[in-house]
Length: 548
Image (cartoon, rainbow, N blue to C red; front, side, top):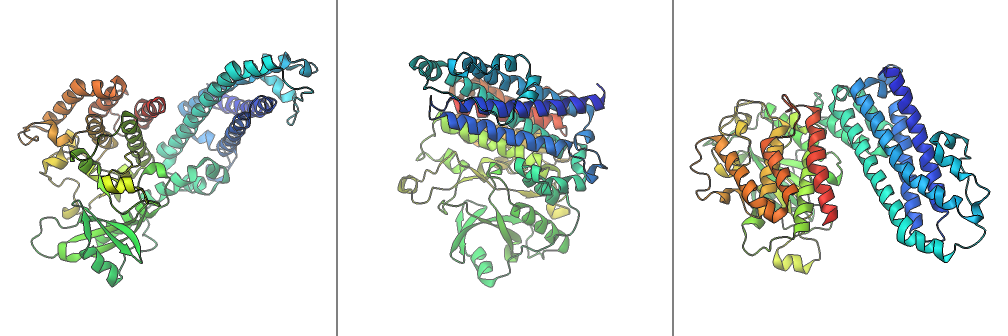
């Protein structure tokens, strides 16, 4: 299809969808006498319409960033056609609610002066309707009309509006993915445009654009987050530990979490923190400091501290509001006989939020930054829960809300021998979360498919409510080849997971472990993998969570 014709058709569908949304909201408003909940439906349609108009303006407003053209014209033809197809689907769905409401109102004697039947025949007739038109009712609705609305029409309209909202969310997320992950996403001016544009802010694209700018920038860090206060440095050395890598202490009376990272592992003596490694630490701290949506499930880094006596640094994180400073790892909860296994609903919610986390982190390209990689160490030890503040039950039973995970364990893309991505790690407890290509002494660069594999191991643990290390009687100490660990995990999922979590959950875990997203070719760095991961993992978990 001619790119110019695709742009014209897409713009026409945008206009049509916006006018259709406006008129549908007006139609819904005429049912306020039937039900107090009608206002919520009306507001939902109007909110979606605001986002539709913002998306249209973002994609089609000419800008000097794009040489006087629009952002839409910078996408390749395949992406343009997908956007057009998405909008056609949204228009078709919203038309179902619109036409149903038209049929009901045109049969009402009070509305006989309105030729609403003509409206439903062709959406183009929306251009002739007054934008602020309303349909008044001179008499109260009849009992029959109330019953029909309450027992039939209301549920149908609510279902359509819900489907429309879900599709709209998919459209926005897909376009955000194309804005950040296709070839256009490497253009710094484009990213700055997404960060500052008002319509981008309405859609929430600005937050992810800012994160991607921070991640991919080759400029020097503008400010240091190193904390040199002697009291803070002493606290880092004398801290109450929660697990091997986390510690809790206070800064100015506020509790914080310290996460430790060795910069000279295995060295028998003190090693100075050289400038190159310090720059890597500084960059990662600044990336983790950037404002993020809660969907990232990562706490905010407020700074970092040197602990030179032990050749390590500590990243300092604020504790999310309304939570107690008593972190418990998922690994601890899986291993403890005193912790009650969560319900099926809680497990699905936890799985969904962790999948969303991986998806969002990959969206802003933390996984391939030259300065920090998203999560080579994504494992249950680094997934942390905090009890809710003022909750005596959670404090007494040490059972925080398992549906609210916080993810730690960010690694550095180590530029020298002590921070080498190819450094050997013989710890089986960590090795089992790594893709076979990343075990022992890896030679391949880090890829987002490896984080998806690690997620699969964690989802297997959540489904069976059992630590991955315990899934083999010798704790995998006799595994001869990296592939043997994956094969055993796949067998465990096939044999045990379906009866505990259902077939859909089992298939999600298998997809993550086997990388079977049916893309063809090398999908490791393909935008298609991110789309497939969202559709086949994140969205399936979300729908399952809503149904339980």
